[in-house]
Image (cartoon, rainbow, N blue to C red; front, side):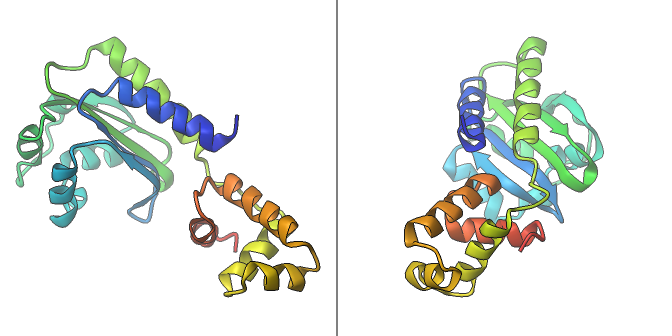
Length: 203
């Protein structure tokens, strides 16, 4: 199974354990995660995004300050914007948070439910899933020369036929190189792979 498929399988498992959704930020660097995923109510996500609550969220601050797990109700950091209270209005009444990894590449995940607090055993399962996702999403330290060349051609604006001719390979070989680069970078599209390669300083 590819890393992308493994990550997707873990997200499916996380969804089963988070009745009112989850928000995942993997390898947060320079204030932005390299990979995100979420299943919270879209109405709440629109409010959260439009009001830049990620910069004000007590759960995020907790995740940047500590590693481990906690219930939202146990976070004692100030919440002047009443983010937890607003979230509860969309069914996110109880939640837990997991944070792991070095501060320079921190992963923070929040999971929610409406009916009751998460039990210790449930939080342990969620933590195990988060650790696996963090490890799977670890940015690669390098790409192959062939992958870099293929990505650079497309990044420079070459179409597949022109890029293949420039590299002296067939168009199908070029597509294979791009596909392997996408898999290595856990990107869904070639433009996303190019951006990630630049973010990782591999391109």
